[in-house]
Image (cartoon, rainbow, N blue to C red; front, side):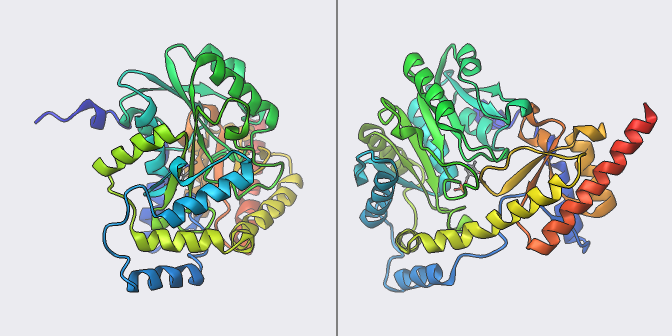
Length: 396
Ligand SMILES: Cc1ncc(COP(=O)(O)O)c(C=O)c1O
């Protein structure tokens, strides 16, 4: 039987860079002690106070169908949070609750892309981006950023690739690069979106993890609230990856259509999860800081380790829970380096190439293990790279 191209072409650009990840998982299952620095999963679990709120809500009977757009409480909480942070008037009518940020990214693209329209995204990219755009029926077009620009996008390069495009997807703080886009960069992007009449889909799931600089939501910039769809999530800010609770914030008219889409796809998010999310978001800044601070500390430790050697380069790690390391001095690709590192030292990292061609010759290291093991793994990576670089020099 024939399957739709939409589903069979979802990930047509391969995903070979994930081999090392699957190999590491296999090794762990086979009983090897692997230091796992691949995916963005915290090394702590959801806070017990959040679980208590979830449990209480479920026991009080919030286990039936929840309101499709989300509970009033959670929508109001998110609206108030975004309004306080950005100054943009926001009500529950601007908010749709989704099963995680990923479902929000998909819904946002369905909302603005017709089949065959071009959806732009930036390379390096979060692994699901091209498939998400294709899944919405659009043509996914990547625009390169460069290590030399610290992976900050350039509006003129986006502009020169924007013919036929209806949307641009950006992510700040960025996974995988750790870049936080500055005001000037975002103003350039906003101007381009206004000039080109593009929707801006702004993935802000790491907005509580900023180590250097400040998170600016492009929705705050002039003329942008009417063309920006912000995607957010409880996953990273509150270590609730498994709870699958995210949102899209945008113009009322778009949200009304997205509620209709949700009615015909997800039919909402469990009420007890939403109550737990409302509790967590209203628990105050301390809880968020408790989740962000281990990464802040490890990032500082990493900067120290990386500053004490000169083989491995660190892309300025301004935010999110990853480090993007430049290993080009070793002469290996990110994929070769990651595979050799796994074989020789049982340390699993992601090859830069898994996130697009712009991150070739890099590896992404998730800061998701305890400080001591993290520092030891980073030091091993640096020594391993230095040995490779020496061999490379000797061979030339
Ligand atoms: C950049 C980015 N966007 C979106 C997501 C999806 O997050 P979730 O669906 O768990 O909210 C992730 C998850 O790692 C991510 O890194």
